[in-house]
Image (cartoon, rainbow over all chains, first blue to last red; front, top):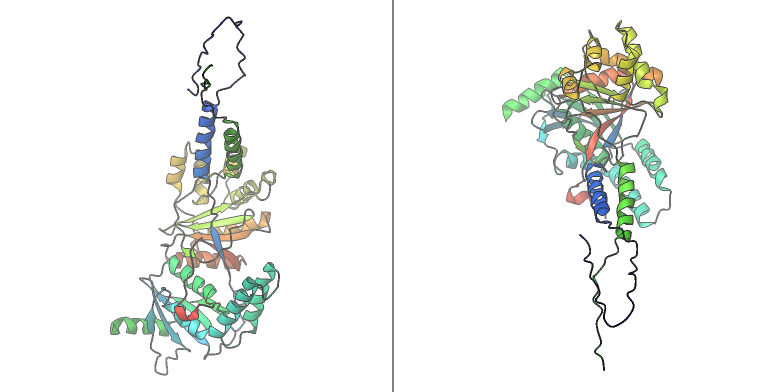
Length: 211
Length: 211
């Protein structure tokens, strides 16, 4: 396939020399095969390993243990409902007082993320500034100690919201991952997954009716 | 005066460097290729912004399909000679009074994820082909009356105590099923686990972008 052997004409009276042929192996089939296998392996290789999001839940409280008290000014309740909607209110709902009004939002960048950022601005900018300083070389710390530093910032946080995530009916697993992700994006130091209580169920129902 | 004759030569391409390169790439791809194991159910994981890659070994994967079936997978540990999967299977066998033959145990060690009640395991392991196996995957029972997932987790931790847990749920799985699985994990004192996700980028509301 690859070459055309050309006879060289013999002119004159010169001796007929034995032609010297270099041992040439036709590599084309080999190249074909290698190329084929290469394509196959390239296409079947999964380079992007799945990613994971680590979550650490608080231990289940023991029988005779009281759950820790919550500063109700810092409590931000996020209630997930069906169709990827998010409802939220601040404080604690007391059935003996007027119930707080639920605000409705979603998972877009100007949705719940904005709400969380507005409340967590201090910590968020602190973490963001630190990361930027590391990037620009102003702050020289080893890469692997960044996480430790962020954790320390989280611990020192005294004003950010304590987010209570509650899932209503018809919530998909995707919504839970989304809201956990929002916590990571907005650097919320304290959040937890809790069950929705009856008062909040009523609030969600009232909210649906008013819409 | 003779004319200058131009030597007529066939253009020859030396293919050796190309072949070298091809084989190098080929060897690289063969060595890095990890074949996708037989999946019990197609699962479309939700997206998050977490860039952490999934751990390579000592990993338990609990899958939740979009119809809320639960599947389980555990690797053989750092070395297949430890036969961790085999040991777990035998422990499950003694829990549910099933005697597995060495052939069945070997078969089980070679498989990946599975999701079916313990009583059906023998039929599953003796199934002639992947299609027949697939038909038997009805999910691991997680009801409080017959909580088999709890035993799988417990025995997996018995034989490999540095396991990490990954929860790989379909984005459309219903939250109550996921919540149940998380509760089972917590009952086994697994409070730290990973959620398997796909990577996506972060967008922030304009006023919160740190420059």
